[in-house]
Image 1 (cartoon, rainbow, N blue to C red):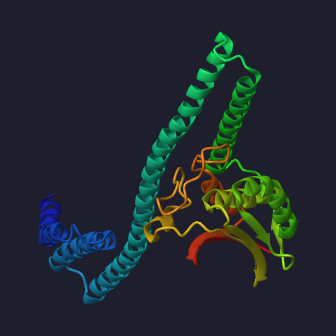
Image 2: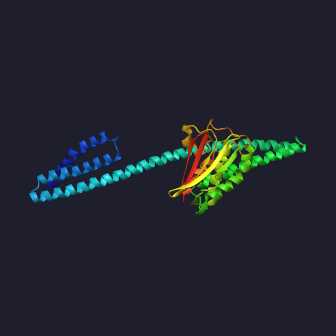
Length: 338
Protein backbone atom coordinates (compact mmCIF):
# COMPACT_ATOMS: atom_id res chain seq x y z
CA UNK A 1 0.00 0.00 0.00
CA UNK A 2 2.92 2.32 0.79
CA UNK A 3 4.46 1.70 -2.67
CA UNK A 4 1.13 2.49 -4.33
CA UNK A 5 0.85 5.82 -2.49
CA UNK A 6 4.41 6.70 -3.49
CA UNK A 7 3.69 5.84 -7.13
CA UNK A 8 0.56 7.99 -7.09
CA UNK A 9 2.39 10.95 -5.57
CA UNK A 10 5.30 10.69 -8.02
CA UNK A 11 2.95 10.42 -11.01
CA UNK A 12 0.89 13.35 -9.75
CA UNK A 13 3.99 15.46 -9.22
CA UNK A 14 5.30 14.74 -12.71
CA UNK A 15 1.93 15.56 -14.24
CA UNK A 16 1.68 18.85 -12.32
CA UNK A 17 5.17 19.87 -13.40
CA UNK A 18 3.92 19.77 -17.01
CA UNK A 19 0.29 20.77 -16.45
CA UNK A 20 0.89 24.09 -14.71
CA UNK A 21 3.15 25.60 -17.42
CA UNK A 22 0.78 24.09 -20.00
CA UNK A 23 -2.18 25.86 -18.42
CA UNK A 24 -0.32 29.16 -18.62
CA UNK A 25 0.54 28.47 -22.26
CA UNK A 26 -3.11 27.79 -23.07
CA UNK A 27 -4.15 31.09 -21.46
CA UNK A 28 -1.54 32.93 -23.50
CA UNK A 29 -2.70 31.22 -26.72
CA UNK A 30 -6.46 31.53 -26.12
CA UNK A 31 -6.80 34.07 -28.94
CA UNK A 32 -4.90 31.94 -31.43
CA UNK A 33 -6.43 29.43 -33.81
CA UNK A 34 -8.34 26.38 -32.62
CA UNK A 35 -5.71 24.10 -34.19
CA UNK A 36 -2.94 25.57 -32.01
CA UNK A 37 -5.07 25.19 -28.88
CA UNK A 38 -5.89 21.54 -29.58
CA UNK A 39 -2.28 20.64 -30.39
CA UNK A 40 -1.01 22.36 -27.22
CA UNK A 41 -3.67 20.60 -25.13
CA UNK A 42 -2.71 17.19 -26.51
CA UNK A 43 0.99 17.95 -26.07
CA UNK A 44 0.36 18.80 -22.41
CA UNK A 45 -1.53 15.53 -21.92
CA UNK A 46 1.18 13.43 -23.59
CA UNK A 47 4.00 15.17 -21.74
CA UNK A 48 2.17 14.85 -18.41
CA UNK A 49 1.81 11.10 -18.91
CA UNK A 50 5.44 10.91 -20.04
CA UNK A 51 6.69 12.81 -16.98
CA UNK A 52 4.61 10.71 -14.58
CA UNK A 53 5.73 7.39 -16.07
CA UNK A 54 9.37 8.51 -16.28
CA UNK A 55 9.35 9.59 -12.61
CA UNK A 56 7.82 6.28 -11.47
CA UNK A 57 10.16 4.27 -13.71
CA UNK A 58 13.22 5.89 -12.12
CA UNK A 59 12.19 4.44 -8.73
CA UNK A 60 11.38 0.98 -10.07
CA UNK A 61 13.79 -1.87 -10.61
CA UNK A 62 13.30 -2.24 -14.36
CA UNK A 63 15.97 -2.84 -16.92
CA UNK A 64 17.18 -0.20 -19.33
CA UNK A 65 15.71 -2.25 -22.17
CA UNK A 66 12.25 -2.20 -20.63
CA UNK A 67 12.51 1.53 -20.02
CA UNK A 68 13.46 2.17 -23.66
CA UNK A 69 10.52 0.07 -24.84
CA UNK A 70 8.19 2.06 -22.60
CA UNK A 71 9.54 5.37 -23.88
CA UNK A 72 9.22 4.26 -27.52
CA UNK A 73 5.59 3.27 -26.92
CA UNK A 74 4.91 6.62 -25.30
CA UNK A 75 6.60 8.51 -28.15
CA UNK A 76 4.55 6.64 -30.79
CA UNK A 77 1.32 7.18 -28.88
CA UNK A 78 2.16 10.86 -28.43
CA UNK A 79 2.93 11.29 -32.13
CA UNK A 80 -0.34 9.67 -33.15
CA UNK A 81 -2.23 11.82 -30.65
CA UNK A 82 -0.67 15.00 -32.02
CA UNK A 83 -1.41 13.98 -35.61
CA UNK A 84 -5.04 13.27 -34.72
CA UNK A 85 -5.16 16.60 -32.89
CA UNK A 86 -3.96 18.50 -35.96
CA UNK A 87 -6.56 16.74 -38.14
CA UNK A 88 -9.31 17.31 -35.61
CA UNK A 89 -8.30 20.93 -35.14
CA UNK A 90 -8.47 21.61 -38.87
CA UNK A 91 -11.85 19.95 -39.07
CA UNK A 92 -13.22 21.91 -36.12
CA UNK A 93 -11.78 25.13 -37.54
CA UNK A 94 -13.46 24.46 -40.89
CA UNK A 95 -16.75 23.68 -39.17
CA UNK A 96 -16.45 26.83 -37.07
CA UNK A 97 -15.87 28.94 -40.17
CA UNK A 98 -18.80 27.22 -41.92
CA UNK A 99 -21.00 27.88 -38.88
CA UNK A 100 -19.99 31.56 -38.91
CA UNK A 101 -20.82 31.77 -42.61
CA UNK A 102 -24.19 30.11 -41.99
CA UNK A 103 -25.00 32.53 -39.18
CA UNK A 104 -23.97 35.48 -41.35
CA UNK A 105 -26.09 34.15 -44.23
CA UNK A 106 -29.05 33.67 -41.90
CA UNK A 107 -28.72 37.23 -40.62
CA UNK A 108 -28.56 38.53 -44.18
CA UNK A 109 -31.59 36.47 -45.18
CA UNK A 110 -33.54 37.66 -42.15
CA UNK A 111 -32.70 41.27 -42.98
CA UNK A 112 -33.71 40.61 -46.58
CA UNK A 113 -37.00 39.08 -45.44
CA UNK A 114 -37.77 42.08 -43.25
CA UNK A 115 -36.99 44.42 -46.12
CA UNK A 116 -39.14 42.34 -48.45
CA UNK A 117 -42.10 42.45 -46.06
CA UNK A 118 -41.77 46.22 -45.83
CA UNK A 119 -41.63 46.61 -49.62
CA UNK A 120 -44.53 44.25 -50.25
CA UNK A 121 -46.65 45.92 -47.57
CA UNK A 122 -46.07 49.27 -49.25
CA UNK A 123 -46.72 47.88 -52.74
CA UNK A 124 -50.00 46.28 -51.66
CA UNK A 125 -51.24 49.10 -49.46
CA UNK A 126 -51.16 51.75 -52.22
CA UNK A 127 -53.16 49.88 -54.90
CA UNK A 128 -55.57 48.50 -52.31
CA UNK A 129 -56.35 52.02 -51.13
CA UNK A 130 -56.97 53.08 -54.72
CA UNK A 131 -59.15 50.04 -55.41
CA UNK A 132 -61.24 50.74 -52.30
CA UNK A 133 -61.69 54.41 -53.24
CA UNK A 134 -62.75 53.60 -56.79
CA UNK A 135 -65.04 50.75 -55.68
CA UNK A 136 -66.73 53.01 -53.11
CA UNK A 137 -67.15 55.75 -55.71
CA UNK A 138 -68.81 53.31 -58.11
CA UNK A 139 -70.94 51.79 -55.35
CA UNK A 140 -72.13 55.16 -54.01
CA UNK A 141 -72.85 56.53 -57.46
CA UNK A 142 -70.36 59.37 -57.09
CA UNK A 143 -69.38 58.80 -60.71
CA UNK A 144 -72.02 58.01 -63.23
CA UNK A 145 -70.96 59.08 -66.70
CA UNK A 146 -69.95 56.10 -68.86
CA UNK A 147 -66.50 57.46 -69.70
CA UNK A 148 -65.46 57.88 -66.04
CA UNK A 149 -66.97 54.52 -65.06
CA UNK A 150 -65.05 52.82 -67.89
CA UNK A 151 -61.83 54.56 -66.76
CA UNK A 152 -62.39 53.36 -63.18
CA UNK A 153 -62.96 49.82 -64.42
CA UNK A 154 -59.75 49.99 -66.47
CA UNK A 155 -57.75 51.25 -63.48
CA UNK A 156 -59.21 48.56 -61.22
CA UNK A 157 -58.16 45.90 -63.72
CA UNK A 158 -54.65 47.39 -64.01
CA UNK A 159 -54.16 47.50 -60.25
CA UNK A 160 -55.51 43.97 -59.90
CA UNK A 161 -53.08 42.74 -62.57
CA UNK A 162 -50.23 44.49 -60.80
CA UNK A 163 -51.05 42.85 -57.47
CA UNK A 164 -51.51 39.46 -59.13
CA UNK A 165 -48.07 39.83 -60.72
CA UNK A 166 -46.57 40.70 -57.34
CA UNK A 167 -48.20 37.65 -55.72
CA UNK A 168 -46.88 35.44 -58.55
CA UNK A 169 -43.38 36.81 -57.99
CA UNK A 170 -43.62 36.16 -54.25
CA UNK A 171 -44.76 32.59 -54.88
CA UNK A 172 -41.94 31.95 -57.35
CA UNK A 173 -39.36 33.43 -54.99
CA UNK A 174 -40.64 31.34 -52.09
CA UNK A 175 -40.30 28.18 -54.23
CA UNK A 176 -36.72 29.09 -55.07
CA UNK A 177 -35.72 29.92 -51.49
CA UNK A 178 -37.43 26.80 -50.10
CA UNK A 179 -35.67 24.52 -52.60
CA UNK A 180 -39.07 23.35 -53.91
CA UNK A 181 -38.34 24.28 -57.52
CA UNK A 182 -38.57 21.17 -59.71
CA UNK A 183 -36.93 21.55 -63.13
CA UNK A 184 -37.56 19.28 -66.11
CA UNK A 185 -34.38 19.68 -68.15
CA UNK A 186 -34.45 19.40 -71.93
CA UNK A 187 -32.64 20.86 -74.91
CA UNK A 188 -33.99 24.41 -75.25
CA UNK A 189 -33.27 26.81 -78.10
CA UNK A 190 -32.59 30.24 -76.66
CA UNK A 191 -33.62 31.71 -80.00
CA UNK A 192 -37.19 30.45 -79.52
CA UNK A 193 -37.28 31.66 -75.92
CA UNK A 194 -36.05 35.14 -76.92
CA UNK A 195 -38.48 35.31 -79.85
CA UNK A 196 -41.46 34.58 -77.60
CA UNK A 197 -40.28 37.08 -74.95
CA UNK A 198 -39.80 39.83 -77.55
CA UNK A 199 -43.25 39.19 -79.03
CA UNK A 200 -44.82 39.38 -75.56
CA UNK A 201 -42.96 42.56 -74.55
CA UNK A 202 -43.34 44.37 -77.89
CA UNK A 203 -46.63 46.17 -77.00
CA UNK A 204 -45.18 47.49 -73.72
CA UNK A 205 -41.99 48.61 -75.47
CA UNK A 206 -44.01 50.30 -78.23
CA UNK A 207 -46.13 52.14 -75.66
CA UNK A 208 -42.95 53.50 -74.06
CA UNK A 209 -41.26 54.30 -77.34
CA UNK A 210 -38.49 51.76 -76.74
CA UNK A 211 -37.04 49.78 -79.66
CA UNK A 212 -36.39 46.05 -79.25
CA UNK A 213 -33.53 44.62 -81.30
CA UNK A 214 -32.75 40.88 -81.23
CA UNK A 215 -30.03 39.06 -83.15
CA UNK A 216 -31.24 37.11 -86.17
CA UNK A 217 -29.02 34.09 -85.58
CA UNK A 218 -26.29 32.54 -83.49
CA UNK A 219 -28.61 31.49 -80.68
CA UNK A 220 -27.32 28.43 -78.80
CA UNK A 221 -29.17 25.39 -77.52
CA UNK A 222 -28.90 24.95 -73.77
CA UNK A 223 -29.92 22.38 -71.17
CA UNK A 224 -32.80 23.79 -69.16
CA UNK A 225 -36.49 24.05 -68.40
CA UNK A 226 -38.25 26.17 -71.02
CA UNK A 227 -40.91 27.78 -68.74
CA UNK A 228 -38.29 28.94 -66.23
CA UNK A 229 -35.89 30.15 -68.94
CA UNK A 230 -38.76 32.04 -70.57
CA UNK A 231 -39.37 33.78 -67.26
CA UNK A 232 -35.69 34.64 -66.93
CA UNK A 233 -35.59 36.33 -70.35
CA UNK A 234 -38.99 37.98 -69.83
CA UNK A 235 -37.93 39.43 -66.46
CA UNK A 236 -34.68 40.77 -67.89
CA UNK A 237 -36.53 42.24 -70.87
CA UNK A 238 -39.21 43.92 -68.75
CA UNK A 239 -36.53 45.31 -66.45
CA UNK A 240 -34.61 46.70 -69.43
CA UNK A 241 -37.73 48.30 -70.95
CA UNK A 242 -38.74 49.80 -67.61
CA UNK A 243 -35.40 51.57 -67.15
CA UNK A 244 -34.77 52.62 -70.76
CA UNK A 245 -35.97 56.13 -71.65
CA UNK A 246 -38.22 56.87 -74.61
CA UNK A 247 -36.47 56.55 -77.99
CA UNK A 248 -33.98 54.19 -76.35
CA UNK A 249 -33.02 50.72 -77.53
CA UNK A 250 -32.94 47.35 -75.79
CA UNK A 251 -30.72 44.78 -77.50
CA UNK A 252 -30.78 41.00 -77.10
CA UNK A 253 -27.77 38.96 -78.20
CA UNK A 254 -26.61 35.40 -77.65
CA UNK A 255 -23.87 32.96 -78.45
CA UNK A 256 -21.91 29.94 -77.28
CA UNK A 257 -18.50 29.64 -75.69
CA UNK A 258 -16.82 26.45 -74.48
CA UNK A 259 -19.46 24.34 -72.70
CA UNK A 260 -22.03 27.08 -72.09
CA UNK A 261 -24.51 29.14 -74.02
CA UNK A 262 -25.28 32.74 -73.16
CA UNK A 263 -27.91 35.39 -73.71
CA UNK A 264 -27.41 39.08 -72.95
CA UNK A 265 -29.87 41.96 -72.57
CA UNK A 266 -28.44 45.45 -72.97
CA UNK A 267 -30.52 48.49 -72.04
CA UNK A 268 -30.15 52.27 -72.15
CA UNK A 269 -30.63 52.98 -68.44
CA UNK A 270 -27.60 55.25 -68.24
CA UNK A 271 -25.66 52.88 -66.03
CA UNK A 272 -25.81 51.65 -62.43
CA UNK A 273 -23.59 53.14 -59.69
CA UNK A 274 -20.61 50.88 -59.04
CA UNK A 275 -21.57 50.54 -55.37
CA UNK A 276 -25.00 49.19 -56.37
CA UNK A 277 -23.83 46.61 -58.92
CA UNK A 278 -23.33 43.81 -56.34
CA UNK A 279 -26.86 44.45 -54.95
CA UNK A 280 -28.78 44.44 -58.23
CA UNK A 281 -29.97 40.84 -57.76
CA UNK A 282 -30.89 41.28 -54.08
CA UNK A 283 -34.53 40.95 -53.04
CA UNK A 284 -36.41 44.28 -53.02
CA UNK A 285 -33.49 46.24 -54.51
CA UNK A 286 -34.90 48.75 -57.00
CA UNK A 287 -31.88 50.64 -58.16
CA UNK A 288 -30.75 54.18 -57.59
CA UNK A 289 -31.36 57.58 -59.01
CA UNK A 290 -29.07 56.94 -61.96
CA UNK A 291 -31.83 54.94 -63.60
CA UNK A 292 -34.66 56.59 -65.47
CA UNK A 293 -37.83 56.58 -63.35
CA UNK A 294 -40.63 54.43 -64.68
CA UNK A 295 -44.03 55.90 -65.45
CA UNK A 296 -46.85 55.03 -63.07
CA UNK A 297 -48.63 52.49 -65.22
CA UNK A 298 -49.25 48.79 -65.05
CA UNK A 299 -45.63 47.97 -65.82
CA UNK A 300 -44.04 50.68 -63.75
CA UNK A 301 -42.41 50.42 -60.40
CA UNK A 302 -42.05 46.73 -59.76
CA UNK A 303 -41.73 44.80 -56.57
CA UNK A 304 -37.97 44.51 -56.69
CA UNK A 305 -38.30 40.73 -57.12
CA UNK A 306 -37.76 40.24 -60.85
CA UNK A 307 -33.96 40.16 -60.83
CA UNK A 308 -33.87 38.12 -57.61
CA UNK A 309 -36.05 35.53 -59.37
CA UNK A 310 -33.73 35.65 -62.38
CA UNK A 311 -30.71 34.81 -60.23
CA UNK A 312 -32.56 32.02 -58.41
CA UNK A 313 -33.77 30.40 -61.62
CA UNK A 314 -30.39 30.69 -63.34
CA UNK A 315 -28.55 29.19 -60.36
CA UNK A 316 -31.13 26.37 -60.26
CA UNK A 317 -29.96 25.58 -63.81
CA UNK A 318 -26.33 25.53 -62.56
CA UNK A 319 -25.71 28.70 -64.52
CA UNK A 320 -24.64 32.21 -63.60
CA UNK A 321 -25.89 35.73 -64.22
CA UNK A 322 -23.97 38.98 -64.04
CA UNK A 323 -24.42 42.67 -64.78
CA UNK A 324 -21.89 45.19 -66.06
CA UNK A 325 -22.06 48.80 -67.11
CA UNK A 326 -21.63 49.54 -70.80
CA UNK A 327 -21.72 52.73 -72.84
CA UNK A 328 -25.07 54.38 -72.10
CA UNK A 329 -26.57 51.55 -70.08
CA UNK A 330 -25.94 48.16 -68.54
CA UNK A 331 -25.70 44.60 -69.80
CA UNK A 332 -27.22 41.56 -68.07
CA UNK A 333 -25.59 38.34 -69.24
CA UNK A 334 -26.83 34.82 -68.44
CA UNK A 335 -24.64 31.74 -68.94
CA UNK A 336 -26.27 28.27 -69.04
CA UNK A 337 -24.94 24.74 -69.62
CA UNK A 338 -24.93 23.95 -73.33
